[in-house]
Length: 205
Image (cartoon, rainbow, N blue to C red; front, side, top):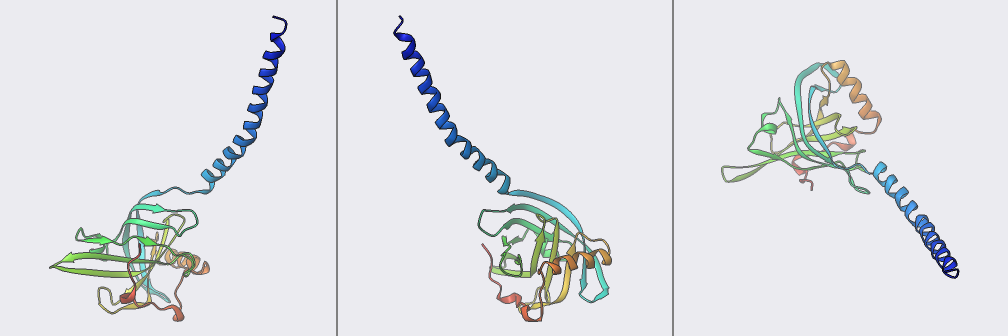
């Protein structure tokens, strides 16, 4: 009996040592997992209706009110550009909310005008595939703010960005202009050197 106590004590110490060594391995993993969970933004479901103002840059008198409806998921994968799947419907442009049309997934390309995305729709009508590219889209703060540079003429086969811009959320031209300036200050804008031909934009994703 007197010889068993050291054996048990030795076994206990060995188990304690193994547990201690395991903690040195497990704790960094837990810390890494915590950092990953904090840094990684999982897909976010978006469902929002925004008042919006469409106007021509430099011409506040051209302002028109409309509403934007956003419904879908914003995906934010690690080391890749975020993208949105769902629908963005604009009351002023009926086809954007039509059940006949589907919206292409939008990839917000970080190294192109600081998050440029192509807003386009397609439908199969009268045995013909129709594609409607509405404009260039930027978003901020997980789709809480939107800016669209509209292709003109809308629904034409040949079109390009000019100065027609849609901003949300905004219910007054002053609010829209202030929000547009914030987008522009982040480099989220088109210039004369970056006019885009809407008929040449390929679908994304």
